[in-house]
Image 1 (spheres, rainbow, N blue to C red):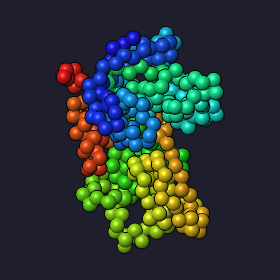
Image 2: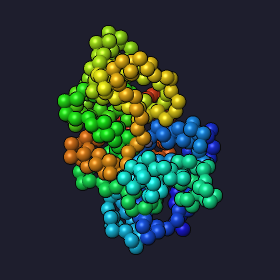
Image 3: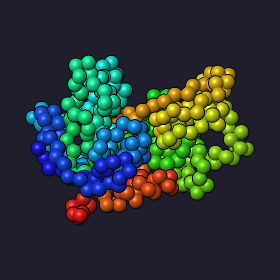
Image 4: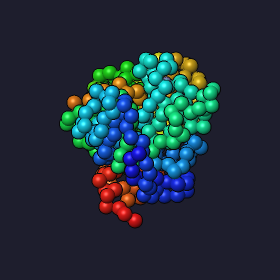
Amino acid sequence: MIKAVGYAAKHSYSKLKRYEFEREEAKANEVEIAVMFCGVCHSDIHQVKDEWSNTVYPCLPGHEIVGRVTKVGGDVTRHAVGDMVGVGCMIDSCRTCEPCRTGDENYCEGPNSWLATYNGPMVPKAKADDGKNHYGRDNTFGGYSNIVVVPADFALKIPAGLQPEVAAPILCAGVTTYSPMKHWGVKAGDKVGIVGFGGLGDMAAKIAKAMGADVTVFTTTKDKLDEAKRIGVTGVLEDDTKTMTSLKSSFDFILSTIPEKHDINPFVKLLKRDKTLTICGALEPMKGVDNSEVAFHRRSVAGSLIGNLADTQEILDFCAEHHIGPDVEVIAIDKINDAYKAVIDGDVRFRYVIDLATLDRNDD
Ligand code: ZN
Ligand code: ZN
């Protein structure tokens, strides 16, 4: 076993605190990674606070991980010691179901779904017919720690030219927004709407713009209109009825990035005939859709969950090539509880990224 240290929450109501634990040594198909940076995702907060009613405690979050390979198992050829790699939301999947066989691990239909980087199988309490959890574990610990051990094929290559702290949020926020834009065929010249301008919305807007789309972000915060201008996209206030009315039936694709339940009806109207609005942020029941707006224009309302491994590698490479990435604020790990509060209160547009080197200076 390897001695590891990180920050974990013991209950839904407790703060994250320094937590010592053990990880298993890398198996033949696995790599051991010394974590350098880990992004702070809104999902981390949902999970720590048990807002999806499936949290296993202690909960040690973090699924935007960048670090260096320190050990490789005997069968690993994909990575070598010293390589800079990234780990996103998944660290394994069943590898046998139809989605897994066709490269959509993030839609794994195996008995435990995919294995999340933290909080274990996506269906933690579910057991297969033989009564066993097929991943052999009920919980996993994420990247708010100094070491992670994962199957080599779930570790992505960080391209040269991407700063590690900038690469980290691309592993979740980047691929979560890129994957639906790729799937629904966003292309140069398309008019693309991004609903919500937080961490996901910022990445979505930058990626869509780099794809050559004409991008509009919808926000409820006046200050963010300047931010939109700064990254070269149009900003619209959701309660600006005049502008909203003028935009009716004008968009080729709309991506909603709001990470909690919200009303999408004002945006469905903005789609052209036959076009799609996809929700990639919220994972909960939402207010119903006015189907007359959907049916009369043969529009679609869809959902999308993170992205597969191939898409994750693609968007890392795309961001390096186009010199885009999230705006990040690097923090020491002992500031994590303050960062959570800021994300909950302030709807910050940049991404907090933890510098794991700061773990060493903590010894309370
Ligand atoms: Zn995330
Ligand atoms: Zn599968």
